[in-house]
Each structure stands twice: as structure tokens, then as C-alpha cells.
Length: 164
Image (tube, rainbow, N blue to C red):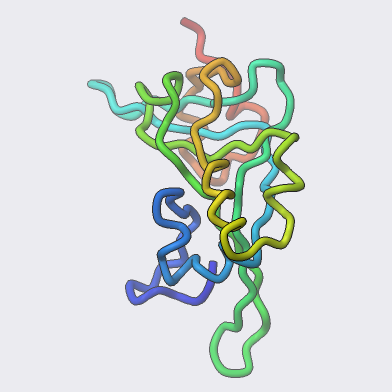
């Protein structure tokens, strides 16, 4: 999102607790909110044998909509316009917490229009109430193989549950 920060990175996550304060995200928070659709997300749990990946998805198999921000910027002088986005993260719910301390903000369908609507002033502050952990019973976490650790692997084998 945005131009490179002083460290040269382009964050892909924005913390819910500070998204409205950080200069890197402030304008997008005010004007460019989006939904990022997914069928799940991965988190890794540290253990004695290394990091174990988990596929976190809805219990009913339905899609997820992450709260996101988008930005359009130009790379260098006269460069092409680039659009990028960031997922807003929050503290983990009871299901995800044993695996990882943070998770994406997952919006309910009832909140989509409110999230996407142009908002300013005091109404903007009310959007922060949407940046909460998902209900504990919405998701399930499934241990999957380390095949997913290689970014070249973008295939169904990445979400096959480990035989226990």
C-alpha cells in the first residue's frame, strides 16, 4: 500500500488498533476501504518440530471478507500507477490465539455496505467497532502439510488436512 515507507517496505497488513493514526494508512482509512474475499487464511504455530501451518476457514465452507484498505500510487517520477492493498488485522479470537496472536478482521455480510460507504467525521470513528476478532464459532483451524510453505505452491494440495 502507498509508497515505500522509510524502511523500504510496502506493508500488506494494517493493525486495527492504529490504522486510523499511522500516516501510511490514514488516507486509505478515510477514503479507500475495501473487502478482500478469501476462502481462508494460513497461520503458523511454533512448536518443537518447527512451525506447523494451519488453514483457517469458515466452518460452513463459505467465503470470508477481510476488511482492507487500498491505495493508488506512482512508482518514481513518471512511473505507472500501481494499486495495492492491505488487510486489517486484529487480536486473535479464542480459536486462532493458540496458533497466532493476530488474525484478519473478518466482516459479516451485514456490515459490508457500512464498511464500504463514504464516511467522515464522527461516523468514521464508529467503523472502528467493526475491527474486532471474528466470533469464536465462525471458523475452524485445520493442520495442513508444510507444502504450503513454498510460495510456488498455489494448488489444492496446500489445504489438504494432515492425517492425524
